[in-house]
Length: 483
Image 1 (cartoon, rainbow, N blue to C red):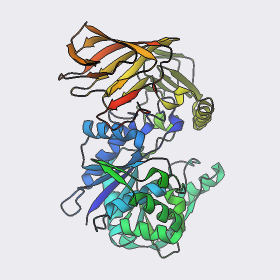
Image 2 (cartoon, helix red, strand yellow):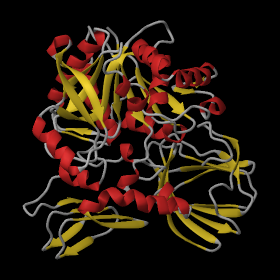
Image 3 (spheres, rainbow, N blue to C red):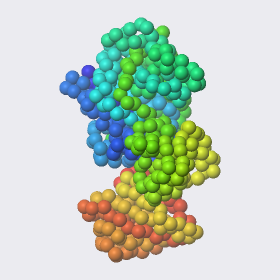
Image 4 (cartoon, rainbow, N blue to C red):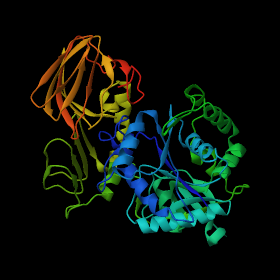
């Protein structure tokens, strides 16, 4: 039986601001261990592969904006044979899974889909793989398998699965019902009963079964997604559904669209217990829980100096952070924003993000250091009519052939070799050499070397926005409106 991992990789992770931004969300961050959450997701699925259960196709559903982040992190971590299904707009997880099912069945096959979010952690990989293999066996018997987490506290931030006393395939329990996020008293009763499990959003089922269930419960979504899928375009590893048709799709989650309607229906659903050190890192308190804590209960990431500090999380990205006489705090420092929150209030970080969105502040969208398919840039200083950037270009990469209407640029090479196109001239620069790009001149920067190229760019002009770019050629399929 063929297995197709389906990784849902389109979330924005607003509760983990200021590390998580809409342009670089939490699934691409390293919050535990030395790999990003997305890379960890790929790594823990890989042991599921076997000669009898081959995984020669992986599907990653993500936003158009994240396509190069996904490819780069796959290249750095585990270069599996992945197809990227690019959502032109966010429509929740049910349409995303439908895209995956249509892709998986396009060649007439009917594989088992192992569906997982990209932003969770698991500490016991062997237990995780064992549970997944049980779930695959359930799915092979034409049932839906959902993984349930045995609760260890009265958690109010998760939905719950209530198991039935009726056994199903492999003697695993059927699902009796799904329960919304409870209050504290109800969550405590769930914990004491032993019949309730956290809903981790992990599903295993045949692709055709998902499509049949969606046709039964939400046919409008299936019709709309199929229409957008039928008008798709493909480019190497990228598959893009029609953006106008996709925008008409009703936004709905996998749970609401199908799973919560399955108990008692013609679509059997069973629960596989997953006791594997799972955490969805839904907020900063969860990051503190999975962190390496000292004797005072503090978890530290980065350069921090603590005195009389207890049960706190301190994240320092760009400078020293000192604390004195504090307890139960979340402190997150980035080059352009600092968060200080009580640990028991960290779920309300999303309210700060809502303010940022209303005020149209850049701190919601991107970090000071912005990643691009060719490398990255870091805005060091800016005021009025000038901006200073540090730019790194990967070996063999190059920026688009472009011009600006409102700014001129000075480039100073500080590391590596630069190939500069300025007007009709193309020439090389090495360390300590520089070039001037006049306003309105067509130009390009490339790295012909084998080590990263770094330059300091000084912009000057009447308007310094990233949208002042007219592109004539680009290696990455970007338009004049994207950077």
